[in-house]
Image 1 (tube, rainbow, N blue to C red):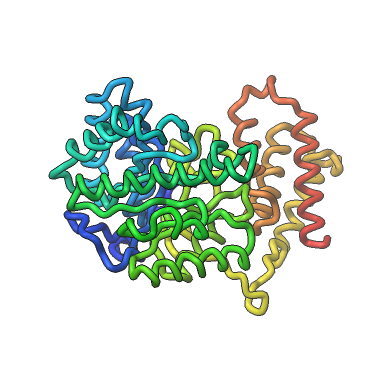
Image 2: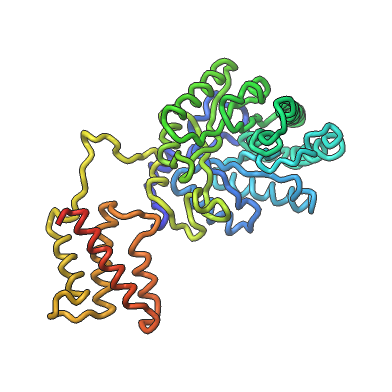
Length: 406
């Protein structure tokens, strides 16, 4: 499926960008964001990929900066960073840059000796280079400070406490430094769990942000209760700056719906389907096709009906078309001697059954049958395994019979 072409009115309502200057707002509920790994690409690719998000109302991106990459070529890295912010800003898309990433934590950066020699100069270089630039919604001082083995895999309770304190000391040091260096843009810390908000930085940040990958409504609501209580206690705006995953029990539609229910801005993870996260994360393939339409609609605030009292059970045989498709499949398979089985007849019958099953959501859409049919039609006929196609058609016909109780 190609990206949805939305009405201009919907875009005007959904794609509300921040003011040119990222002065602290009281409310960030208008944010519809996505994490974006591809920010260090050529301009044409960036514009194309951000365009996918823009088409569904995305108005902000969250990106990771990495010190080790900066060290390889500082000037190029700074130029790429500024270039991305300018491109995104020109499209009405703000940027939340992450300065330090807890998920890829090197414990060496936690030492005050590192701060003085390398860490502080790096952060100062980032902020000085971006002074006068519009488009930054806020600095995320550190992504998920406790999401690493240095925090989780310790040999004793005492060592665990020491490592945890060391990590949060690093977080607080850089919260204070960034606020000192940048008087314009707000700061936040994207904590892994809302229960860590107060210990990490709630008193120092301008915006309270937490992440949510919890697998059930009760656990998710408990996390939201904590986050909202912390935001209220410190009288600070709240955002969910990372959520949504097909493989952790909180699919995008579920996770994003919670954000809408709590009237809270959010960043999903992530815009593109690629790399090691591809099997469980991402909205768009690089060519603009999508993995699941419900992800796209949920981002726009449109959700599937989950009310059993009003839900309609789909019936592809209401007008007897399932019976017609089954008869065509039987004929193509040679069950009707009057119609000889040819490859074209097998594929035509398979597409007929597949369209009925897909249209009525009766097959898993991660492995859509019509994609297999499309692939076979692109192959030279001599290379197609006819028995494989026959088995495929028989399976589709059987699924259709069972779905319609025929």
